[in-house]
Length: 272
Image (tube, rainbow, N blue to C red; front, top):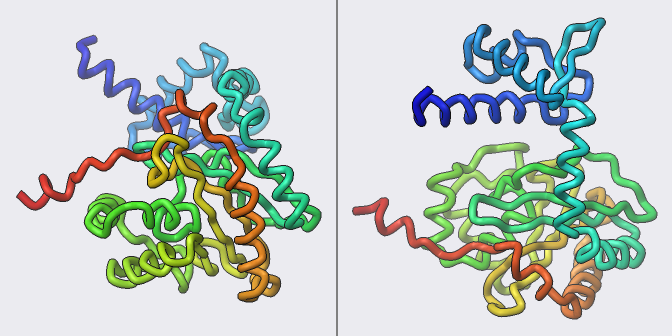
């Protein structure tokens, strides 16, 4: 098998794994074929290989495939090695205790923003979990607080690549509206997602900066609560609590994680 074929095989395998993530009851071969666009024979070969390595298991009754506990334990071993919990959890727990709300953590990498941890407050919030997912940049508080750290030119480059998909009727779907929103975020120091990805839920995000470069956002804290609780006074209160807690947060242990985004000015090359 040549290098191109090998790379294609890896990409297809990862595509199947992505489809299986979160499908706790398993997925049929037909569903994987339909979602991936791969042929049935190729999907079957990939599943057979993953099953042989112990990363996938097949339900004896339904014949559906799902990720195995072996795969999950491998992921958790890596998470434990990163020691993310040791670094962030004291902060998340203090915020959950002080606010009583759901606190989520996102990390910024070159290829996007990821939800990586959460702590429930005294008021549990039942929403679809974002853990392990990439944040839609224009529709989440976490995404918008990062976009606000970029220039307008860079923002336009990002949305040119990612698009402005509508998740609810309140999702921002035009570049001008997004730039106006970002200008307000820069002034306030925090962002809001007002039912833009989850109906009846309002979330605010506060940035965490690289200790070596105060303009470089490497993470954010997101507080989410039902809309009926989130009047302007409550939002300001939550912001002040988050601002106070993150101000004393030491981000230096994260230096080796390669977090944050280095400006590429890709829009220049795109317009040539």
